[in-house]
Image (tube, rainbow, N blue to C red):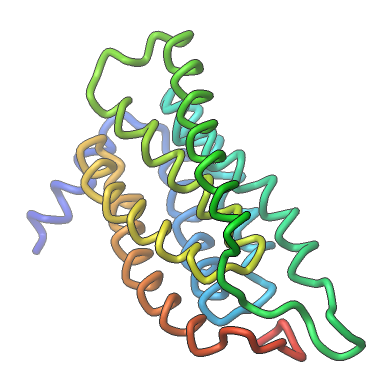
Length: 212
């Protein structure tokens, strides 16, 4: 067991201490955010804002532009989602979890395609397409952009995007040496599976409270 921990922390050799500490803080708040999301709890957004704000800074430090853009977008969409989730359908009920409409599915495809184009341009200008992980970053960024948009709108299908994106990200981050973040995405995958099940049970039900 000690050899495993030695290997994990060896990946952080030469990394500034404050970056390691910030990554751990980001991991904790990211876990809290997804857990609150599973419970349809409004605290998903303040915890998410903290997690993504820190993560964006760390990823910018490492020059991982695609991943940084994901978290910067999460930060903005967390503010949007915070507003949308607190809207009421009547005096005592908030908006319910619903499935995506045909129109929203079309917008999801458009957002996915637009994100691919945008990130490709950013990576090309930064000359980042010199390693295979850049191409995977581009793809996962598009997946997560759609997932976050659907999450803000309380759509059940958002969890499908999270699961697919997380499964790809686990080995990708491990390869990059971001061990704690890789383990985080493994846990996020598990929570996302349960989150989908939980939201499916609450489908169409308007909650009376957002603090559960």
